[in-house]
Length: 211
Image: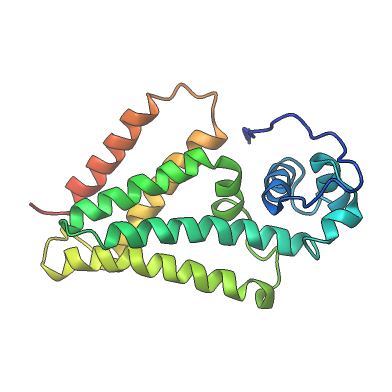
């Protein structure tokens, strides 16, 4: 599988007393290394070298790799939750809100390819269940906002088939499949991305929702 990583120039070693290292810089380096090396192959030393600090300095911000990965996941899901909540609160038709949520989801994936692949394309079970409980709860909140909007459509009898849950999950899975393929198969002769997104959303909503 071919994976395209956004990788800026490697940071030079930061001098002693350089000041406070931004956690975001560590997280971005970790995203790249987790994808390139695999979670098991990544080390704190490799992440620290990528950022340009010592391992000791990195440990001042994160206890271990698990904490880094979970913060990457939390940041991604929190952004999606914020987007979904804002769209869900708009005083417009539920179908229009569903379309906006799906489009925002694909935008997030394409603008944050490393984080997206770690959160939504990685293997489960890497981090112990007790450590990831809070992250899973955050994901549940994000999904609840999404499926709640689809339930509004179902409640007025506009779903052609399935239940609110099966329709919501099918639409999510379809959009995930599109962006995952765009990210991991960049050499394929894809149609323009904007066109693919419109066709995907039109196909899903015209197929599942009645006028």
